[in-house]
Image (cartoon, rainbow, N blue to C red; front, side, top):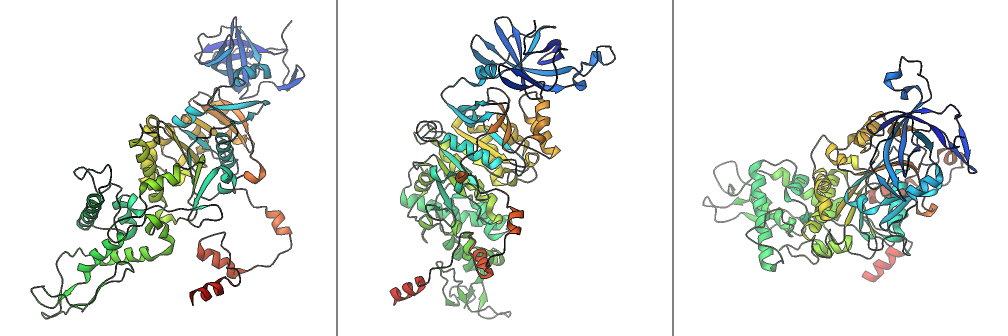
Length: 605
């Protein structure tokens, strides 16, 4: 008598691909086994091939006529009752292992996998695992990921808009940082939040940094002197010729050298430091030093008596005033000493430095150097505030950062984190003894293949070298086809949600480490919040229902309820406040309470 789980028999074996002839007694649809119902012959479901003392396990990639072996295309044996399965692992005694030690033979039985079988594969619980959801076809069985491999071998969470991508990331990070022994209390996760979606989802176990912080949040500042000077000059001044760039970089290097020598900064070797060394310098002093020769005039031809009316002021960025030079050969005379011909660029630099929307970068609070280059707080306090606090997660909300400087800032943030953990890898705060996971939302915005930028350069470096130094990357994107191939190919684990674009699906399919084209083809029909997880952190490729966080702990990324909103009666609308919020660049801006300004004025009188 045939077992109720019998699906068919092996028809042919070609490497890891096995063709299975379905048993004639198997009816399509649902099989009832042990009181539970199972879908028969579904793409993505598992099968078991007994081999005496141990069992082989495979995953169904094709069903029907297209799965018919090529040798049978014109034979009488052709039909629709064929399956193509991919061998993926085996159970020897009681433990499951990826890979196989032997191949099945023709006519070996192939059985449907029951929940008891799945429990043997997925039910084993080891330290260092994190639960991300439940099996889609057996929701009593949790899906666990190996945290070591998830972090060190990098990962990618990919899915179209509305597929549940942000919720999946939030759920995963909440599982990692769960209290009461369920999670990992000393985890260290840095999330680059491009759209400001995660503050509400992770606030109970994360420090939130924002340009315009709300209650319980911290001020986000990124000191300009932590960026490469060439990048900050490009942002401030625009295009400069090589002569001017070299001259300005020389001045910056001289300023950094003076501070390093005066303050005797620990670890700085004056003989090996470069202009890119993260040492403070004053942009305001630099601007005044550069603008002076551009506007200077002289009272004498020997150029010994400046025709000055009013000196410049670096603090207020007031330009020095000189008597205008004449066009004839008479006083005042035009200056030609140290002139770089960059008056227009310096005007732009001054404009940027006075622009309030760039204050988080150009006036970084306690990290802003004085006119001599000294700072109240240095990089150690910045790093400690970002990755040295008691909570497991740091969310850097970049939603208020102008797009003109976003790529440079992401590159600067990643550079600060990577360089510190790379060079400090043998220390307790370093990457090897306390690894760091960097989660990059909307990664396609800065990891494209077309143009080089500081962010892409740093992510490539993390992807290639981070594993050895305890720095892992998680790439989150809705357009994997736009991400640089080098970066995506370094991701060892893929969490692929619904992808409707064929180009994106083919990119994921090409990057998947397992030969599972049939599963990849199902990416377009996954339900919201359902993912195919495959790669090094997963014991097996699996179709998973991601665990939803509580309703009050979900990312602020849900679609607006159009029908409900348009059906409700319109309430009062205040477009003055709408414009005020726009001008404040802060969605949470509120007008001051009545009496606040009066109280301030009274206190000042």
